[in-house]
Image (cartoon, rainbow, N blue to C red; front, side):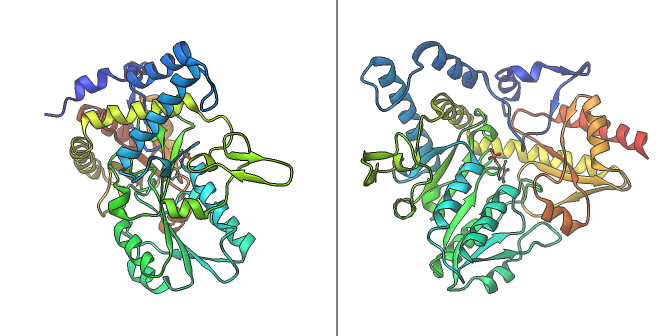
Length: 403
Ligand SMILES: *Cc1c(COP(=O)(O)O)cnc(C)c1O
């Protein structure tokens, strides 16, 4: 039995009421909630050893440096990277993607091609458009199918010797569908192209193994994995991180500086200019410890149960359409015929149920289905079937009020 009651007690926010109703938090795909151990780690840092890292001789600085570098090693082990220095701290997924994009804008030339999937978050489309504008490279798209899967037949055709880079999310944030990234990576490598996988939406549910995937870059945000906002990772294979130029200039990232020439520090510091988000990096490590203690296989099994239950109950409501029917994480993206998703979201909030409505930063997907957006209910391992029952009743009520 999955110990959901004990787990819920770890999350103080779950005791909140909203509009006089118990909070039902189903917006986990936007950000997850924070367990007490992570909150405690943040308080502990500022209470006991707040100091700048890597350059102080004094005790506090040493303690902070040790904890920060310990966190990097925890994260390395979690993702099974070969070396800790292949694991860069960033401000999150968006920052990580921009770092890689900026690096590639000096490696690409006119006529090179970049492939992105049609299921991308805006943060994974816009940086590549900018790179293409700057370099004359061409952006190609793997289209999607009605069931939310990627058209791998088209991928096989557009992948050529000109392809330098392929970008795809591991799990779509709008639909929750799991993409065949191992196949995508394997095929790209046959043409010598690098692959960046956006793992922001996968990491709350799946423990990725970057060596097994043989991926070149893998990125994620802490705040979707029970950690704090404003911190995330960029995994890069050593050979690629050596090849990419530095992203930002500043302290921490240099070896020697004169006005004639600056030499850069080794990995990971070459990409970590300035004082990093020390506290939240440490807290990210604590969040991963917390989730690993529960176990990602246990989390996935429990969430799949919630997904099956929620899907079945929702489908019983007339007029409901659910998007994405291939293998998924615990996300239900749906519409009700004749009702705007936003209006449903507002009524659900009045009833204490937090969901996301709109295009979920993935307008091309909404354009494909010819809808303005969806209502997205996304579950975490601290949610329950009782909460799904409350949600279903709230959807029925919203439908009655709005139709
Ligand atoms: C949330 C999300 C992002 C953006 O993450 P930030 O933490 O806002 O930078 C990118 N891609 C996917 C798939 C996401 O779910």
